[in-house]
Image (cartoon, rainbow, N blue to C red; front, side, top):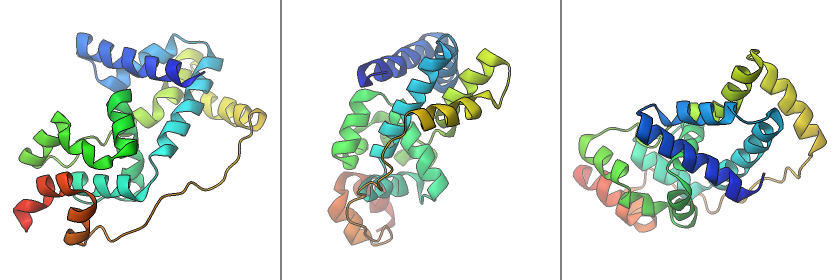
Length: 189
């Protein structure tokens, strides 16, 4: 599955969720469950690639500000949430995580103190949910995924996360993520 097809699936699920009123992750599972098993595995592979591309200190700092803190597990959910925002916002966040300060959900979350904004755990499991629905076996995805990964072995070089810095240093956060810091730290400064 090429990257354009991956984002087409994400955008179709976003549109379906908006029209039907179901949650995005449910619309995504519904859409993926209509695909052949091989395509679900290819989707999972692309999902992992775009998810991993967000594994950077500056993105984690954005999640830390938006979430009022951010553990390893929460950072997985944040990255899934950024993907759920769609290709445009994803690409903006990869280039400049501070741009998330312009997203309406983030702006509203800052003003209402909703620290779960953008964190979307269930998106991480859409492929396995679709596979389970297709096969009737909740564990079928993990067996198929292990087989798929061994046949499509990839380099497992650690990603360059960029420069680490202290997320609890307000001056540093203002310097690196000025717009998000204004939204989330100004009230406490």
